[in-house]
Length: 604
Figure 1 (cartoon, helix red, strand yellow):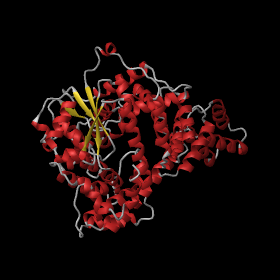
Figure 2 (cartoon, helix red, strand yellow):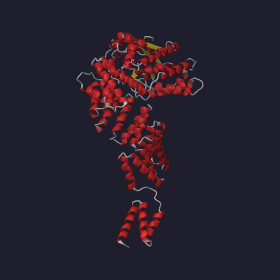
Figure 3 (tube, helix red, strand yellow):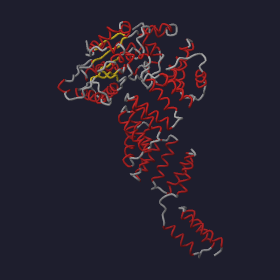
Figure 4 (tube, helix red, strand yellow):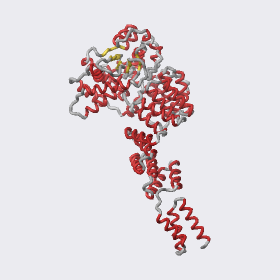
């Protein structure tokens, strides 16, 4: 046997050991072409033909991972698919294929690949997790939850699965469950900066701001370049009335990421600008960027509007304010049909006779008693909640979206029914779920204020589910309300009517009509309080307010500005000051620029 043939056979054996059977097979065939009687080549070829490779070699897998980590997704996908043809029963390859599809945004194909991996290996925790991520990114949250829970069942020490599950719980407004998930994430991964930041957000959603601040600080101590966590620290300090601290944290976020538009906007809400402020030129530079996304454009326009308001540049103020509102309306894709249809359906429901909950059904339930503070946004609801929650028997829960979510669920169910009727069982369920949500607050007070302003739309539902409820309705000069709304950026995807003069005036008119409807339907059940009268005659109005709420007099309600409770709304800084009587006249300084709005409001 020649030295060349020996070398070929040795090479073929090495290839066989490494799992490259096809390459080894071609070498043996080449040897046999030249030496048909070579027994060693015949023997090895026979073994190879009898052996069926069931999994790819490490070298093949390393090649795919190198392409994936280099962001060469199409090549990685092509290579993986080629390997799947050779090894159709290897779950790892389907998991890799799904990961590639996810990276290029082909989530339907990704989901299919992950499901095939799981079918081949039902205990494949990573594939369950990756499938959960794909479902989460396509907003199939219930399916995503099932996948994360399965991954955690198979491998409880799975920090990223706990973290992602917590994010979904936050999105589904279940912060108590989110806290548990994030706590598991950091327990298994003590250096998980993102999970600490998310845990802070969950505590903040539960109004536990001191705990939120601790978690955010842990996050930035682990990752000192975590701009988002610094921004969240700023938001927490703002809610706690720690304005100087808030400014420092927002500035830290911007120092890390000068293009962080949301941090610029948040900073603009807590500082007073001078002409020489360097942040102004930075924001203008950001706005000139051609690649700026719509959300960042909106943030910067609203921030620059605040700058020019501080500098008394009214024309520039409205240039940026009008543009920010225009972009926000487009972003939310808002139509007046949205609220007009809802209000029409609600009127129809409550124009018919509906059941009321009997007292005998309420025995043994959660004893928390809510006070609902409603009205138009920017009408003074935060001020009234600050006054009432300064009473030692009351806890101020700020804006709770629970009633809105529960009633929208009822409305959705009714839309598929022939009759627009609600049963006593529905109201009892609503009552139970709402009171259950209040138990998330770890507090001793029996009375809780809920000041979601737009609950004015759901007064019929509230009084049907809570016949004993106290409802406080804020009334204020329409021009003051609507001007304050127009210059305000609302977080979340609601209030789409707030970003256009015509829409704003139309919604205000609809609000008045619906409140008149509720007053006629529930006489003496809604307590109206004038913001202007409250600021002029604070003591008498406060006495009457507390009396209506069945609360004894407390001097602390007059000194509401000393209340240290956290306030999440835009009025956080105002309610930490004594009552100011001139705020309802501030719109007049801008009268020339908001004439169309004022004219539209005259019809109401």
